[in-house]
Length: 333
Figure (cartoon, rainbow, N blue to C red):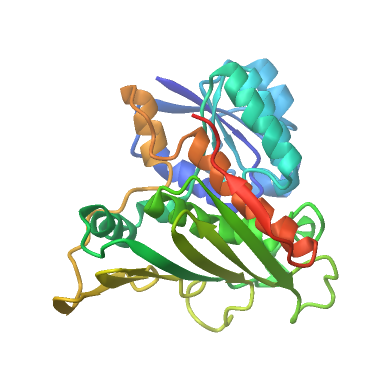
């Protein structure tokens, strides 16, 4: 049995956990913490059977937990991660894991000291299109990857966002949105070092002077050049959150991951366009909790979480510095 606690209800991604609990009878929600009564009220039906605490420290002091899900205000997440690790729990975190490189260094150090796992819910890894694309790459169908390009449009709907979202507590658009596709590039390439440059700006929301509504980054991942854009400018009249896409260019073919449409377009030097059959979707929290229950290693462990977060934060740092070139290297095993 896994005793699970939730530190923070600040983002709707916490629903991934509530959904997963219906599939995992050996995982029990024991306690929840959040200082905001509006958040507690929003998820009242999902947390009705467990005690709620005003902060994660009170929750950790009152309960012995095996896993802590960290889902609070972005800039406050690092403290919850570190305290949970020191309390003997593994951590499953919403992205972003943290908002500064100093915070990340502390998380990495404490995870190593305690021997506990940190896993970020990089949900794109579990999309059927992603699973099929990784099979293509691993089988050599596309040859050696050379270029990767992705776009991450998001609908802002500013009136529905909490006030902290437009302050320094947000951290930055590249650390928040681009990190998903950074993780995808690392998963597809296996790269362990390279360079990164970032840029961000504001075009649509002058009423939020500390909030960048769009950004882009280019990074070298081993022998692959990757470009990633992310923005809060997706048309608000359009259904959904935006059209997520990624293009893989290899020496033998090209694949276009059309995540929003749930389609993978593939063509190679010896075969015209086709759409491979897609496997079953993997739920965002499924792999990590199943791995703990079975004693196996999750697809996204501490190293994967730290590496993707570090590159995204370096891209944000580059953007904040006007486009400096930053070097990155993978965390030690």
